[in-house]
Image (cartoon, rainbow, N blue to C red):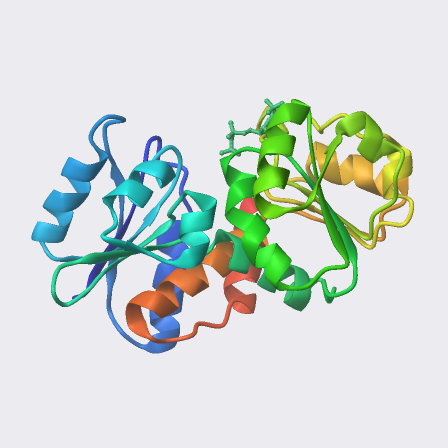
Length: 269
Ligand code: ATR
């Protein structure tokens, strides 16, 4: 059976195995997909050993996305721009290709599940860490009217904005503006908090999207709804979407995401 895995630290919480096994069911093939915990300092050694043992592809999660970028022999352009890899593809000659499917997973979810076309809309991305770096290039490829990046530590937003030739804002300045779409790429949700944006920033917002997910709406989603956002979303669809892109890389089969997303959602509640 073809073997795949997800590497992380921690990894016990990962939902990736059930997502990929559901995709395999659609393709009507048997695969194995394991959660593999690697020591923080042992990424490349651990992955190399698994490849030696027949691993054909892998997902990579926190904190190894940068290590995976270094590990890959060749990178997709978007992985280069993100400086982070979440998908490894082992080729027939044993070389390893690295991609980052997070951004495409997010864009597909925004367009398909929430019915919002990004073209000609103004987008605010909140945060300037690794998660945000992974999505900016695929976002810009959708040709939005404008993309601004805001961060609590504004210098980090400025660095990122400079590279991509977009606007950087402080959270205070972003709070005085209106945006069609606001994406939360900060890790604030992990501690049940929302970034410090004013309610007024959401008045014209068609979709407020939090890249993290949980059993109940996140603090950012609550804030957005209070501020008048038409729709508020969490990142579960992004998770399934990035998995679908990885699966297609590995197997050349394009899985349907909707039913997988529904059963995953049901299992969270
Ligand atoms: P990740 O890989 O998840 O992006 P990271 O690189 O550590 O993690 O980045 C975390 C991001 O979340 C940063 O943009 C951080 O803001 P700072 O640069 O000012 O630290 C942001 N963040 C985390 N907690 C936050 C909070 N409570 N409010 C606003 N921003 C927060």
